[in-house]
Length: 256
Image 1: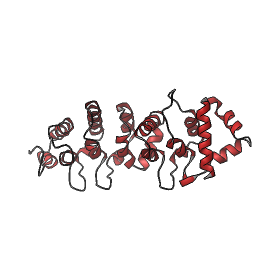
Image 2: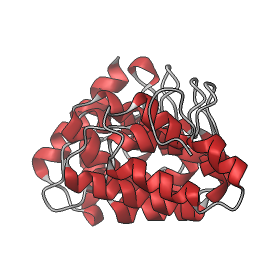
Image 3: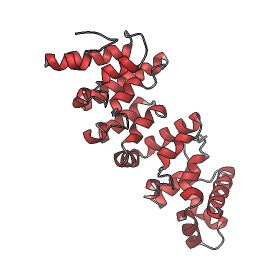
Image 4: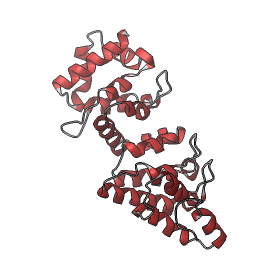
């Protein structure tokens, strides 16, 4: 508990003073009068629930006024593997932020992926389910493109507890999107299929293709932009039998 309290205190005082990146070490040396070794010892220590100082920083994340968070950046540079640490529930910083408010989660996710794309990819490759969770906290199409360019097919093919792949979730979540976000989601789907075309053929544990999953679990109106996009991608396949298999629906949807 003392460690976590120290982390909170450090972050609180840092935010109040708005310390510049190049002033970080002198600031910390003032904050920890016992010297640099004491700084290292405190910042590497685990606190309540196995939290690192990065977990605590993410818990109280607010959008930086100048576009940068010098404390977070300094910690990433000084402790280059600390971002990979998990708390006692097994959550790294990208997983931990999901429990925060929507604005906080969106702000941190975009900050982290934009400035630390390689590190974000490392976390996703270790836990592919994180990619699916980013659908609720990341909308920037450029950042998504950077992630997709750095991922391998094994990660994209990962299936969650329901057997849904990233493409299944991307096609469905959230089907009540506003029109501008639907355009972004269509762009994401198209780029994913273009980058990993085989993923369009995968089915979940209910034997549903991506198209069938959206038709059976998504909006009642079958004539929507995302469904038409998926249908069009499938119709470009050469195997007629495969087309029928991926599009056939027992209740709703287009019947080949």
